[in-house]
Image (cartoon, rainbow over all chains, first blue to last red; front, side):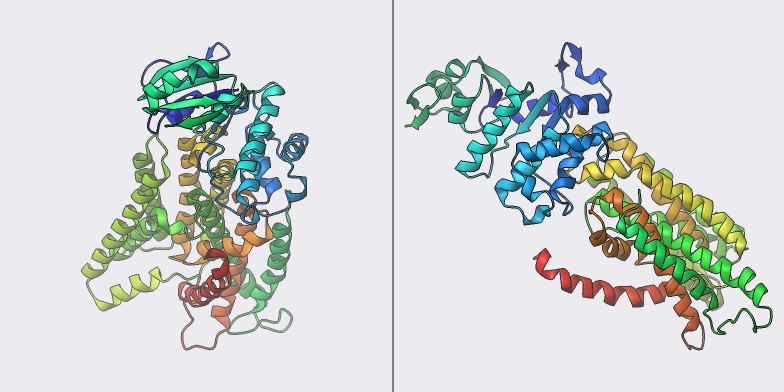
Length: 220
Length: 317
């Protein structure tokens, strides 16, 4: 699980967009498993990479099951063989009982779960999520991170844009810190999110408290 | 793929067609009315089939447009294709070329011109906001040109002819309009069906749709072709028939799972039903002259839509 951190405007979402193949880089190239991402057809790319945008837009009042089934579009089997993947994604996120409920009647936390289930239903090798925890309360943040960790354990590469440095510190295997469009640090969280990096990039004096895996950030 | 809405509207259409054939200023009894076969085969059947064709095109185009713009207030007229087709037809009327074949051909040329301009403006990027604004500008330009031509009309009779045509009607249509509009409309609905998966993906927003493998420029091309063919051929044979594309998807949506693609076919059927019934009502109403279809649909549609809005007020607020 990789976290992309950095101040507002550092280029986190842009980097995620480039990795997802949605933004053409001004220079350089994005690679997927050793091959140029731009060399894949949109459909091949869509099967390999599941992308969860920050704005959790759902234009029509679909049922949760229909919403999740949209994740099968790159496979073209939303009605047929993809049914199992949709059911698996629903139960992985504890949405079995809500499958028939319209999206408009979900709470914020349920909605976030449904949107993540949509990505999981596509069975992508890579999951890219842009601030998936924004606007979620603490319990739902913890729950959603646990589900993303499950997906990573099941073999998917998970790349998240995260604002919560403590979550990145405790949960990520690798952290990229961006500052003004440049890579300021890259490594295991205790190195990439050291107090020195936080001072340099965010301009905040802060100290890490607690034990590894359960650290908290005390500012000031 | 037969969903509930498809079944319901197919059944209603099968019921409504024979009834509409019998309905008219003179109610037709196939066994006693003189010349019943001729009236049926040469007047009422082509008119009924044409109502189905025009309504199906407008219904499907409306469903696709609402899906594409992710907005339940979108209407096929937004892209400027209907005003473009109307401009073509008005030109034909103005220059006295409005024969049974030339008028629809001029209208189709107008629709094709609007489609070409849209495709040119859309370019390769496929952004929705720019495209929609361009379509609206095209619509108002075509509308302004139409008004300009009307103001140049040599006499009151010419003005009245143009304005009456613009109101939309299926009066005195024959099989040749059916042969013209039906294949084009069918091709257009097929194009819209090709856009269906992309429209479904757009439910999640433009970025998510692209991440699901949707190519915006291709989606846009299918949509321009689909809306252009359905609406263009509809205007060419019936004039401006409003409200169908706006109302019908609302009627159909609650009967489906609300994915734009599952809305397309039922909306075509419901549009066909609406225009067929409205046109039959126009014939039956005891007025001095026959009520124009475009007016009837607006008279029918606006209050209905208001009632729908009032009912939905709680959900929208």
